[in-house]
Length: 87
Image: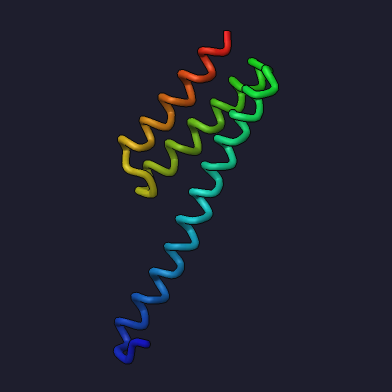
């Protein structure tokens, strides 16, 4: 355990940021699962609606620095490609 005041503060700040990052990553994963579930059910409209929400969540996560911009772009691209292939 840290003894220096600034080190103690860094530990608490890191814990807060870790929780925030976990929450946002979890939200992204959930939105991706919703897209996958709609695709598995064969419901194109629901998949498209879920895709819109998922793209929004992924973009927000990338803008906050939780995902690298290329990672976010790759995730969005793969999801969009899968939904478009449903037709």
